[in-house]
Image 1 (cartoon, rainbow, N blue to C red):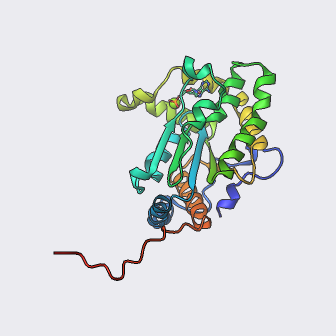
Image 2: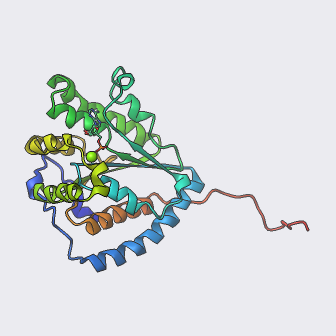
Image 3: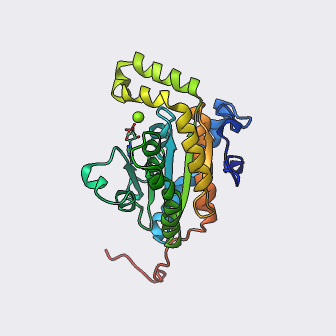
Length: 265
Ligand code: AMP
Ligand code: MG
């Protein structure tokens, strides 16, 4: 079922993907399905952590309010925090800008045994950077191939990569921004600068379409997650991660023969 969200080969048109899609689930059935999957997720993560044979990198991208923070909060709450690393990528510092764009990213790539979550990522360097013309076109255009090479290096050294684009509609974003405005407890999440980004919606959609089309490799696939319904978003992400961990055939490490061991008094 999660394969429905896999980005097909060729040029992606985001208008072909319905942000309201819920795969026949209701809120109640989606929640029930998700809690079953969460149990399995916790078991698989324990194997990943114990075995230290591989890492899982999860990239979350999406427009403001698409639910990157919410997904992290809800999907990973069952996981042993010891095995989890979350990296939030903000506007680069002057030190970061003085390096190549992947320098700050590579440092946060998860080591074997860990699940690493990127809340925003190197894709910002072909999204906000492109839309706001922060570098010349020749520079951002070259980055798609550079990103593919970078992700290939990670994959070749034992990192499974899953990339989720959280797909909301422009109308849904308006409602979510309005809700933030009306709730003083959410004001910390409201950034007046986000309104400028909203005005550039169509340019962002074009930039996302290119990122999704140009960097959709078998070793680092993109998933388009219908995200207008938070409960469906969470289900799709959880299910995709569980399916991926299942495929990784994770084993507990070989322990020594404990059959003759007696615990002394
Ligand atoms: P938030 O994730 O809402 O806390 O905001 C982080 C901000 O950092 C967003 O506006 C991003 O567009 C911005 N950002 C992240 N990475 C980059 C980058 N490489 N260049 C410029 N801005 C970035
Ligand atoms: Mg934000």
